Each structure stands twice: as C-alpha cells, then as structure tokens.
Length: 150
Image 1 (cartoon, rainbow, N blue to C red):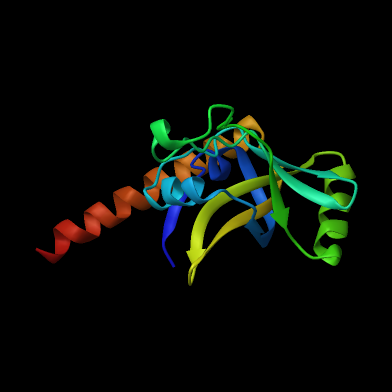
Image 2 (cartoon, helix red, strand yellow):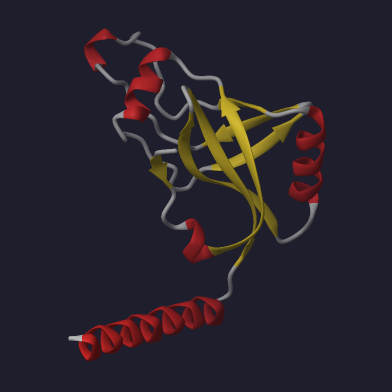
C-alpha cells in the first residue's frame, strides 16, 4: 500500500474517531496525476447528497495539461464509491453537531486508488498544545536515548 496524497493538517486540527475506505470515480489522467503524487486534500471534506457521497474541495491537477479537455476543473466534486450502509452512517455523523467527515489520504489497494476517510471532531487550542508538548517530549526522550547508546 502506497500513500500518494496525504492531508497533513487532519491530525493537527481534528481528532479522528472512525475510519472508512472508499473508492473514487476518476478520469484516467487524474489517476496518473495521483500516482505521481500530485494533488492536494487541504481544505477538502466529504458531503452526502441524497444517496451519494462526494469529495468536495480536493484539487487534482491534470497529468498532461495540453492533453486534457479544455473544460476540466481540477477542483470538481468527485463521487465516492461506498455501500448504502456506509453512506447512511456517514450521513448520521454529518448531521451531528461538532462532527465532520474529512479525507485523510489517497492510497492504492492493488490497482485501485482508494480514499481514506475519517469522522473527525475539531480540536480545541489546548488539545493542539498538548499534542505539540507530547511530541516534543517524545522527541527529546528519543534523542537522549540515542546519545546514551553511543
């Protein structure tokens, strides 16, 4: 499993409560672009409209801009391939106050490109500070341990 595009801000801004995996409807040149690690999930989110889920706000540039259709929009909404039960669960989470459904990463599963989705709750400022403090102390401990081994 290779991660092609990662949303780096998700773990900093949100606490992930549940994970889902979904396929996506993509054009061929979008697939090539993703496999070359082009694209961005910053500011993207998932919305449920009717009985379908969509990835909104993700940017996937064309692989070869000269060979793509003139009306191609890199920020177009992309339909996600989930079963009805998963869509119903995500719709329930989306309607709850304080929860949002965000994309975490795009990766491959054999020859298919999948999207890792997380049901997330926004972190407060003090939660972010705690995470930074925890990461810094872990780094210091590992650095001290590494120097004592030499």
